[in-house]
Amino acid sequence: MSAPAATRATSWYPAEGLLQRGTVLLLPGRGEHPGVYERLGRRLSADAYVVHVLDLTGPLELEQVSQGSAAPLVLAGSDTGALHALVAAADPSVHLDGLLLVGTPLDGDGASAVEGWEGELAVRTACPAHRGRLEADPQFDRGALDGPVPADLLAAATEAASRLGDLPVLLVHGEADALAPVAGARALAAQLPRAVLATIADGKHDALNDLSHRSVAATVVQWLERLRAGTHLPVVVTVHEK
Image (cartoon, rainbow, N blue to C red; front, side):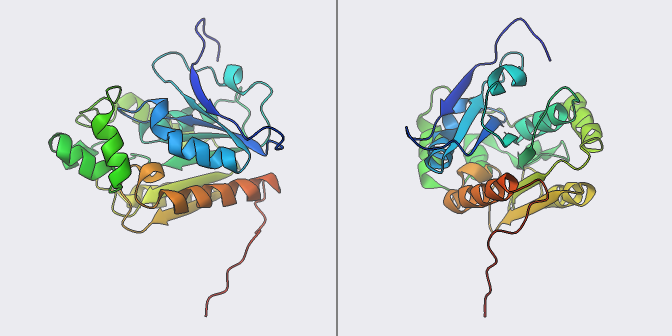
């Protein structure tokens, strides 16, 4: 994966003196830019993980960004970023320890669920703070969800999913995602031998920035901690409810 231009990234690092526990490379989805994930970046870095959110407007140079990164190295993506992550993870030249897929749009035609800007906000998130941020963000590309997922990207991601082998994968998906119904995530998880599926009750499409973002971030950290213990994902915490 070589290209003349460098991949730009916005990064969050653990506080000085903390041992870096791993690295997450995140690919944004339609309309988004790296700054949209500031809240997640701060939260994961507080748990000693390095987070790089990549700018997908240029060539994707994963090796360039990940050079010297603390392991485990996880590639993540939200919306079409999840499709790009799938394609990249199946590339034999890319060496990853895990894959995180969020709101993966596998049916390719969820745009019919979006009606205008208010409709887009409603589909994306129920979090008042995140809605307010998007409303006031001049860098955010309104209307990016209006069209279908590019057919070539969807086809490449679907094919790549069959070549992931035993790579550990965490899928996070909102149960109320009108843009990418959760059934697609369940089908993909069933196809992957090392998949963990986390569905969010009443969750919308932007699961990392939705109303339950704290619980989602905690779920991601728990999975990262299991990944640190080995790619066989040993159970770290078992909760017994009466």
